[in-house]
Length: 75
Image (cartoon, rainbow, N blue to C red; front, top):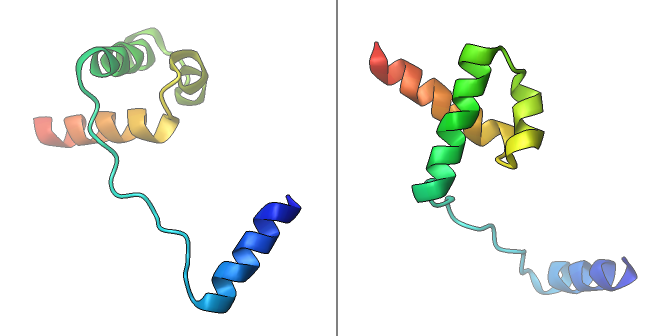
């Protein structure tokens, strides 16, 4: 913890900031299949969104945004 605070203080003094990573890569292959199955469990089986997050290992926000984009695209 102390090492991280020292590094952040040094970065603040010379004007540099930690770089934020760019956009995340889209889900593909097995990860996309896993996400679709997780959404299927929520939609057809009545599983809670927050529970599927922990069971599938895919973040809740990723699953929900995938579902929301798919739903909007269908209408």
